[in-house]
Amino acid sequence: MTVDRLRALLESDAILASRTEGDALAEQVGGELARRWYIAVIRAAMAAPPDGDTVRELYGELVDRYREQPDHLAALRALGEELRAREASGELPSTLVARSDRRKH
Image 1 (cartoon, rainbow, N blue to C red):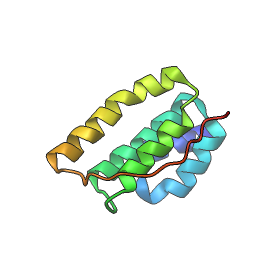
Image 2 (cartoon, helix red, strand yellow):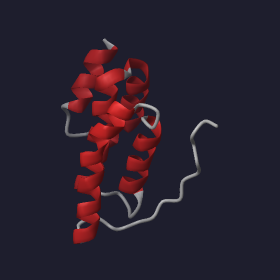
Image 3 (spheres, rainbow, N blue to C red):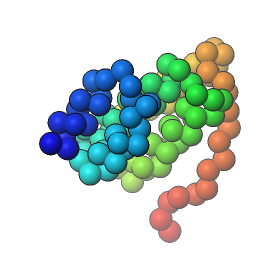
């Protein structure tokens, strides 16, 4: 049921409006479906940025989430490149989000 609900949210037009539920389901489900959810959230925010730094913050959170998983991190590179290209073109605001070092020491 949880997997089906997350899939339904992924196919909806209300991804940003469904963040609370979708994020909770993604945490429960994990795996590829969860990664697809988080990417869909970023893409929805890129399509209609709520403010100047949300998209960059979401991307930073996603990179932090998968930092210890090189295969997943490599798959996010294309999304990061798209984000930087849109910032460079002026389509998205160029922001600098200060993040703490979240690596395990």
